[in-house]
Amino acid sequence: MTTEESSDTNRKNRLCPEKSAECVRIMEDRKKERMKMLTRNLEVCDLLDMRNPQSVAEFAPAIYKFLHQQEAHHQYKEDFM
View 1: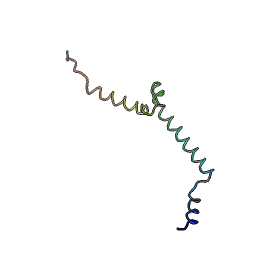
View 2: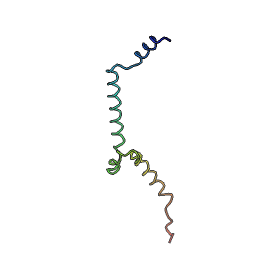
View 3: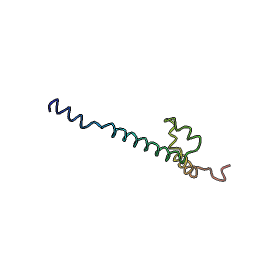
View 4: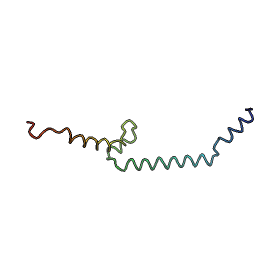
């Protein structure tokens, strides 16, 4: 492949500015929809943690559901004391 052919291939692979702007818009729309879906089931304190990626606030509802299920299995017997 010559330098001229390589240059033509690179030009074809680049996105035109209109397509690039469209891709950015689509990704922003998807990001907004995902955030709406994630925040729909969260408590207020978890919504405040959404800015911190280490808090994994989007998993809070699933974690609480699991803990409630496990709580029933690990309760003390009525005649424990």
